[in-house]
Length: 549
Ligand code: ATP
Ligand code: MG
Image (cartoon, rainbow, N blue to C red; front, side):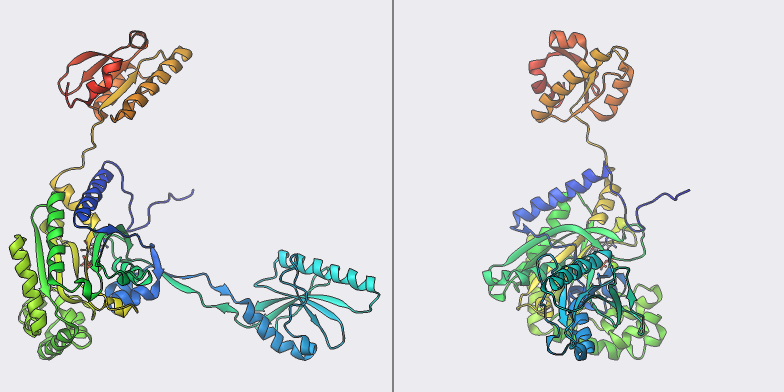
């Protein structure tokens, strides 16, 4: 018995009515982004692995253990095989080595060598001894032999297919047609490209910004994306291996104002508005500044010194981080370590004047706009090019996975992946977690249709049934085209079944039997009020457009 195939661990199907909630979230996000002058960017779902190694950081959890990475097809390097074989055989052929003297349209890959003895050897190089290559070679050999015998020459023509061999000393075989198959020792595979399913979208956006020279417009780029991301994590509620993020980036040359604290505050204010419009109540904005890269380096040393005497009392991870990357100790979730971490020096005390001013300006703008926030001294990003403002929006309803979204400034990111100076700020919001939060507030109810059309046929009279079903489709088309949402029943259903089905999916039922077809007067029943109304077909659409009867 074959086993049943299921969605892969950590991935899931999204079904109606929940998908309606996803659509509403996305539509709201798009509408809000548009009001703030953001345009949509769609980047590929996979990228060169190097982008994430550099753009997210090799020592992050994401890159070090969560990425889906593969080698994209090892490619057979034919040129390398040809040149190595030529070198090994040059004594036999002298000057003619490696020349395509027999390249024609029909035999494009056949190379003709003339030996020191004057005989010809037709050689084809391939990844493996395929029938196709043997055929090509076979016909080239026959053609040359015919040519030679016509000219009366005594030259011999042989055919040889050279293929790579992983082991030395493999023997040459001869096919029935007298063609030699020579396994030639060596590795002739060109190393392929390492590709990765995107674990996040900021690196892709910044790559696109650089690739399309968006900085040269001199304008601030305000870009948003909605799409799947992939991380090999331990699946649990709110944490999946394929999940969706809604994110945005504001990036541009410094002359476009990309470093301004106003940009940080505007992004945060936009997020507060978006969450409010989505109907997510009770969120908390946590905010911090990690300063410039010099500030962070200074703070890292202060932390290292402060951790030296206490690290031995901490968890294994912290003991390691205390030496390698002290900043990441602040991410520790082990309960026993918390009092020690809370007593460590705070990064805010290591900020230089510029960074302090920047952060104060962000907070002042948030105060002016009336966006509430909480300072969280421990909110840091583990990467060097994350600078200044860092933030998270959390929600109590999410339990352990309480972060709805995270973001911050990344003034050094573009340069880290080989681009021009392009300071920026952005965020990524977990759409799955938005849905979970909203489902806890309201359950996903399918939207009721405006009407259910119930054709009434006679199951025994096939011609009549066909006629009434066809008429029902025509009526449904008319109503749907006038903008109404309509579900269509089937003439073979008994009246009771039609009513039961209709009551589940629609607000009203429209009965269409032979009588109604003849008279052009239809019966409409409204389920909420229980009223039954006779409506002329010509007035049906406008009647149904009214919210209630
Ligand atoms: P967490 O601490 O929850 O692992 P993170 O720091 O890895 O989050 P980011 O890389 O900042 O997350 O991604 C931004 C947002 O994307 C998170 O706040 C969260 O809402 C969402 N997110 C991240 N990983 C997942 C996942 N595996 N499944 C669902 N949502 C996720
Ligand atoms: Mg994570």
